[in-house]
Length: 92
Image (tube, helix red, strand yellow):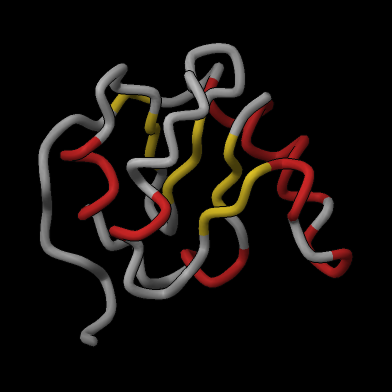
């Protein structure tokens, strides 16, 4: 099982979740973050760190955001891993 970054991350891209990830399974593009489903160990460390509540266990992704499950898997193959905190795109 894995966790999934969903719509609330789009345009925000807070990276608080990245620094607590013990396996470095976060990837980024210019607008949001993604979790690699084969690298995530389902530890849930990232969930409480997300200030916009964008991270869900794949079994609990809201129906409106189900497409993000496949999107996370697909995007990670073409992106660079992110391991350090960066300035977010949006302000809290």
